[in-house]
Each structure stands twice: as structure tokens, then as C-alpha cells.
Length: 160
Image (cartoon, rainbow, N blue to C red):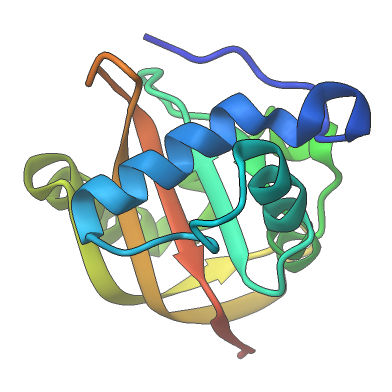
């Protein structure tokens, strides 16, 4: 099941509060922690998350998953605007030689629900490599508990 690409988060679409609710609820389900302040309603959380100082991104469940969400920090790191990012196969966020390791990692996440403290090299649109560390990757579940993608959150990165 592939999720449709969303319009860029904005006031007009409540910063994709419905998708952010899935990100939040799934993160809490798997980790027992909060992605953002739990006192925020879904709209407040979505607005905050889009401009947060840490990266959050997600992809759908297509055979070749495509990113369907990225906050401004993630888009900046990868050197892409929303329309390009949400048409980008997530496997291409890793260099070719690292894609097999990335696939194993995502299979582990699919089986376990989430992993923490992942570190790996990613690459921007313009070929700039960066190391992400202390990354949490988790499965996304919709309100019925159906798997609808995977997401990642990281706040530690350095260019290499």
C-alpha cells in the first residue's frame, strides 16, 4: 500500500496534522516516549515538527518506498525542496554501496517495530555526505494498527 504524496505542510493544510499524528502515535507505541511535547494538540505538534531543530522524515510502503514527509531540517540536509523530496525513493538517501546495509536495517525495523541509536552515512542531492547518529527508526501504524510506512528522527549529524 503506497501513501499518496502530501502537499507541503502549511497553515492551510494544518501542517499535515493527520500524518504527524501517525508519526507521534507510532513513535510513542514503539518507544514509550514522545516525539514532541505531549501537551501539544496534533496541529500544534505538526506546526512545531515541521520547523523543529532535529530531522524527521518518513516513507510510504511502496515496493520502492518514496519519502512522503520531511521537515525543514531534513530537507535542508538533503538539499531538496518538498516537491522533489516527496518524489524521491528513500533508498537513494544512501550511497549505492550503503544501500544493502540500509535495506537490512529497514528489514530489522519492520520485524522489531523500531531501532534506536542507528548511525550511518547519507548523501544529499548535491553529493554532500553526512553521518547521522543516535537515530531512531520506527514503523508507522495507522489508527487501525495497519503498517503504513517507516519514519526516522535524528538530531546529530556531521558532514564528512
